[in-house]
Image (cartoon, rainbow, N blue to C red; front, side, top):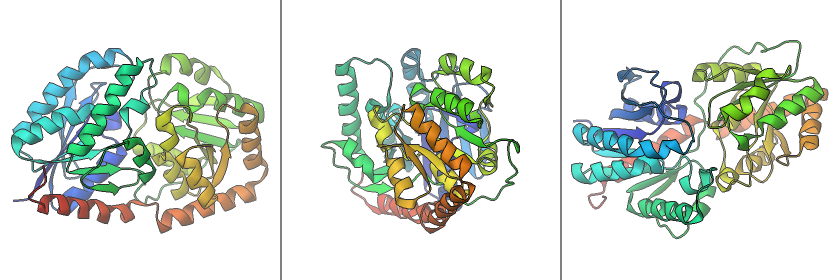
Length: 375
């Protein structure tokens, strides 16, 4: 009988997140019986469905994005996740981030399953809300404790080991958040303007207002897609500016289409948020896949990649003059923009693609399942 893997994730944007979907599909194609338990916070998707060989189970409970009220709903999510995991009798529980690892670990102990802890973001350093320091410190301690308990820890970038502190994972593997090779139409979003695309969280630490201001000053057009905790504060300016258009939450295929059709991709993260310093998001690698230059925040892992490859322009976060100059340099030098895009594409083909990650994921799973001492 095929080993049963149960993924657990407290979000379900556009039905299922791209990174989780790639991992789940890879295992399903390799013969695993794969399930995914997701929290549908918008109550927008079926409670049960099958997607590309993956059995999806959703918990439909309306919840805010990134707001304090979310904490009060976590116990209900944990109880649902625990019961559903246990009912599936898994061989491996694959928990994504700290808000799933507690019910996942408890259910795994009950079922005799192995635990994979996939850290998309370190919780204690990701939360931007005003959390008392003692609570933030406790979150970090608990998270590092669970790192020690897991049979396998997955990081999207090994630079994040610095966030682990004194934790010593039994096994550690880097599975970068890179896309599968896709081909899509590349017609311009707006053929009369230089188009910048941003797809991701609508949050104050993503430089969105600075982007709007820079596009207004240069005559560029900004297209924004996504959702997030600061929509009420940010969307008014994005939607009322003549330089920007808000697309809402769009399917991943449309994200790729918009990336392929734009002139540059924005990857701005405030490095004063500790977790952001280690961000190397999929939008960076999607831009590389479609040979698009990137505007990236300095002092981040993403900027290190951009400098290494030569596929974009790093700018100091919050420096609107520098952002305006970076945008103008791309607009006024189409040949250099094209060379940046070509260097990004070459690096994508060489190493920053999902085909290079699949063997690492599969070998890690084989190793965990073969180890009788694990758990």
